[in-house]
Length: 154
Image (spheres, one colour):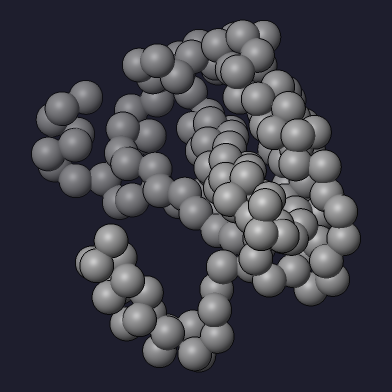
């Protein structure tokens, strides 16, 4: 906890001194957001075997669009009062993570390991590298440059 607090204090310079956690804490205009429905949508997009085990690009894209829309709603309007603050922040964190996961699955245009795409059954040698994801406004992904050690491990 102390390390996280120290990191947060040091991060203020990078954020211009403003807090960066908005979803569930500092909405632009607070209004009621049904976090139970948001959580159900996250679970549907990430736990449904027809969407997550038998992956296809069109389903991944549709799921990501759904989650991005929900993220806009949560980021702009969800606010947890004292009794619901933790639940609201947990829901926002799960939604953010689900967005990164689907964006990554969509970017990996191949089947590799446990990541199997029914529309892309082949493994692509050019994608034998680490995929990084992030983003709060919109989920983003990028492949790190290939290295000899990664290419040899494939």
